Length: 140
View 1: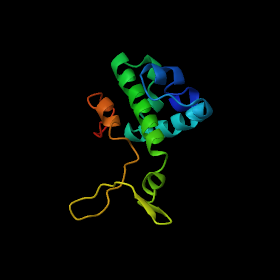
View 2 (view 1 turned 30 degrees about the horizontal axis):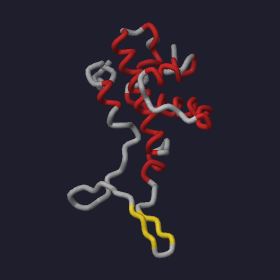
View 3 (view 1 turned 60 degrees about the vertical axis):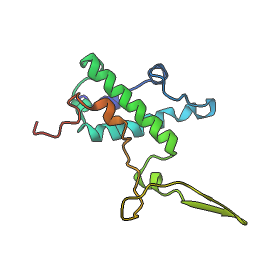
């Protein structure tokens, strides 16, 4: 078994920057491996651990590029939402009140008024993985 994420990361910080993703502040730079690890888990889940059994660096260039961009998108999503789990992404309070000042956070709701939860995987990941075969759920 190859298990890519154990041997080498799916994306280096240099590649992340080269793709044009939001750079980490100097004090946050040490957190990049943690964000990468969590994003890699999500991508492994979405792709049925494809790169556990296929060497990413020797894969077809356009699929490798799409996958690396998807990892970057997932890292940026975690950064923007400040969380790594479904619970942390959805547990932010809708309103805060200090004294007589009340601040509300906009949220999305369905037609029945139920709050819609944020997904663990960034919806933008699918933009990069669509058409690569990595999202295939057919029989192997």
